Structures are given as structure tokens and as C-alpha cells.
Length: 363
Ligand code: NAI
Ligand code: MG
Image (tube, rainbow, N blue to C red; front, side, top):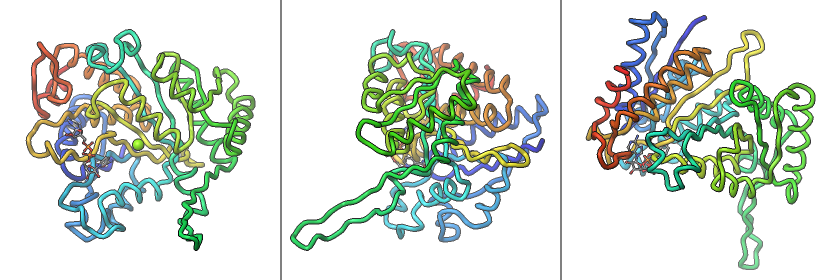
């Protein structure tokens, strides 16, 4: 099978973090004969500077043809006043839309070596390993009507519409059930069926999909607000959480804070499997942005980007052993007390971006 990777480093610390992934890919090609074919493209502010768009049609075509896309980060003060439809974020939004990336995977993992630096008690987070599967292309962010109506009496009305169709709930829950089978075999579905019709349908479709195809997986339903509470109270009760776009946005940010710095958090966005080949379009990116405040200083933590590449190995190329090794190397380096500034603690050794990348590669 081909292994075509498109690298879109983007702006700010994006290219700095991506450089560390490049080293790992070069090692894998040279020493493990992994056979990755690399392509490069521009996205975000750098693409706007080069050709006036946040991503060119040529680079978009490369993304559509790639087996996976690795995305760094986009944006920065330099582009704060460019026109709305070509602003840096528009590049990422176009990638998500054209590649139909409906499933956003956000793991929340607490590395043992960092359990002390969480804002929660150590026993609550130590060993935490959960995965939030957020629906990314539907729901209230996209439903119509979506408008502000002038009511004519000095009042206005802001309207957003939550819309979910059966097929959307079926495919996102299918992703969650399949992922659960590779983990601890449990899915918690979160909605608000007590007050939302879309929540009632969500619950019905997830239940039916479970019964028809995934009855070997343990399924539990939870109201999303109670789910938020449980995430903070005892997050280790969860394995895979599946939820809609809005609740997923909030719950994944809450889960992120269980584990510490933005510089640690990877993500994956997956499309539907191709009818013929079974392979999915996929984009992997750190959760953090371009961090203009530290860009160019060599201080960025590359772990979120490297862990995103580990997800790519696991989900796009089924290179489970390599993904496990890479994740173990990250945990090992943290265990050795090697830290970038954002995760620095007393008694640890402070390093920059390239030394962190080198240490992980050596491990
Ligand atoms: P940010 O995530 O870039 O930075 C927030 C804070 O976390 C900063 O203090 C930064 O130094 C720190 N930080 C982030 N990643 C880090 C890393 N890997 N290592 C060490 N420290 C790290 O978010 P912010 O400041 O709100 O946005 C900056 C720019 O990034 C804006 O232009 C924003 O639009 C863009 N952005 C892009 C995203 C993307 O490309 N997906 C996501 C979020 C923001
Ligand atoms: Mg968010």
C-alpha cells in the first residue's frame, strides 16, 4: 500500500514542531524501510503571502490525493487584518470540508511523569487514557437557519439550528465503536435527550447501531452535562466518549485540561472509508495554535505534533507497533525528566524544541 504523506507545517511554531516529525520520518524510512513518500504544501498565513489564499487549489489537490495529511498550525498577528475568507483558519476549514473529515479524535492521556502537574489530584488523572470522538461537520455550528433577525421593535433574534440526520449519527458512532474495539471496548454516548429532539434521535440511532453491528462493545448513555461533571470527578471511568459537535467542542477542551499543557495534545480528523479501498481521508494536527509569543525562539514543545504523527501511524497506516514505540518514547523521555518550558517542573532538565525531538528519536 502507498504511504503518501502531505506535510502542511503552516505558520509560527508549526514548522518548528514539524521539523521534529520530519526527523522521525527520515529515521523510519532509513532504518525501518517504512517507505513514506513526502509531499509539502503551504497553508495559512504563509500560503496567503505566497498566493493570496489560505490554501491553493494545487495544495488542496495534494491533500485529496494523500493517504494522510500532517498539519502544523496556522495564524499570527501578521495576518490579523487579511480579508475574512482568506484568513489563515480558512485553510484548515477548507481541508476539513473538502476532505469531509466528520470524526474528530481527541485523546486525553496523562503521562505518569506529568501526573503531579495536573490541576486535578494525582490519583484522579494518573494513568488516564481516554478518547473523545467529536462529530465535526454537522450540528448547531452548521444547521440552517442560522441568522440574526431584526424583529423591528428594537429587538434582534440570534438563531442557530441543531440538525442531525440518521446517517451522520450512524457513521460517527460507528467510528467510536470501532475505536473502542482496539482499546478497552467501552463507548459512552453523550447528548441531551431530556431537552433536545436531536438528542432523542442521537440516542436512538446509537442504540440501534450498537444492537445491529457492535453488540460486543459495552455501551453507556450519559446526559452531556452530567458527562462534563463525571469527566472532572472521575475521568478514568471512560474509554471512548462519542458526542456531537458542540458538546464535543466543550468536553474535549475540559478533558484536555486534565492532562496539562496544550503543547502535549494531539488530534486526528477522519473521513468516511472509501467504498473500494476501505482507506479513510485523514488529517492529523496538534490541538495548539501557532503560538506567536514563542515562535522563533526554539522553545516550542514538539510532543503534540509528534503524538499526532503517532496517531497517523496507528489510524491511517495500521502501524500499531511503531505507534506504540513512538508513544512509549515520549513517555520515556518525560520519565527521564526532560521538559520543554511549558511543562517544566522543579528538578527536571529544560530543553528546547530540537533537543526534545532528538531525545524522543534516541529513545
Ligand atoms: P496557541 O495555542 O497558539 O497558544 C496559546 C498559549 O499556549 C501560548 O502562550 C503559547 O505559547 C502556548 N503554547 C501553545 N502551543 C505550545 C507548544 N507546542 N509548546 C509550548 N507552548 C505552547 O493559541 P493562541 O495564542 O490563542 O493563538 C495563536 C494563533 O494561533 C492565533 O493566530 C490563532 O488564530 C491560531 N490558532 C491556530 C490553530 C490551528 O492552527 N489549528 C488553533 C488555535 C489557534
Ligand atoms: Mg474548542
